[in-house]
Image 1 (cartoon, helix red, strand yellow):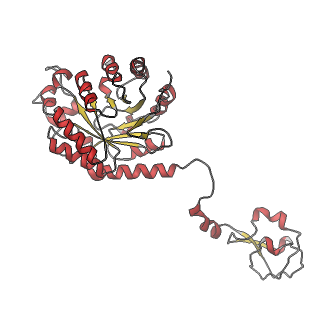
Image 2 (cartoon, one colour; image 1 turned 90 degrees about the horizontal axis):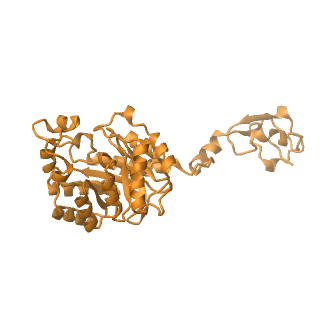
Image 3 (tube, helix red, strand yellow; image 1 turned 120 degrees about the vertical axis):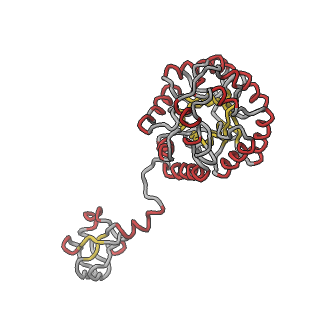
Length: 353
């Protein structure tokens, strides 16, 4: 499969290896259907330094049948007294609310986008002019929906939880035969929270090697270390759920980061990026003073008179490293000394003929 025809960029940001990681705060449905809570999530994402905040856009009647059960984690977090459909109906956001949230995100200078779960929701987001669209893991085999998403001409992020490589290939084919929109892929484990032993970060390598797309991680583990490890392994996008309070009612709060943790995530990612460097092994500026002190030089093992030939028993190897390196001992031996040297004087090249 060929790579996208255009680089993946969002709101003027190029998303690729060597560029700053694109950090997505997944507000999802953690607004609990409350527009004020949704705005507060945007504020928390912006205050934490995230690049984007993402919601979910759906019509419950088009998303799930009345008899569809909840997942086990949803039963644990929201109870068994209602159906999945009843739960989702409380979490829908109207078009008017989405417009208001988009405007609030613009005022906070953070990218706003959403994940559509049906074709009408794709159309709604297209009218809103969001800068990219996200395919959720549960829709990756819904090829008609993927083709419809591709018609909007926006960059597409594809989450791949629960998927095989062949299913990912089919999804990308559906998108690319429709449009040459740029595509990025997120490795994902669709468990809430995801067990660390199931994360399989090396799957990012498989996705990158096979499909030639920018690759990242949609991380549902608890804590921050898996996201940091993903960045160190080359993730160019990291997505984590955001909540104001993990104890709030709702299906996703417990597998989310609170605002302070989101800030720590972004700071940690930026530190990992800075630490990766360019791969060239060389002394760094911060090491130079230590090198001067910690390395060794040739020093006079006894007093040496000017004109005397430097011999091995007249030389010791001691700190500091400001003189002739012990690596150059053979070059130094046999030369005549230009000036008197006391015991322990550092021998530099100016002291030798």
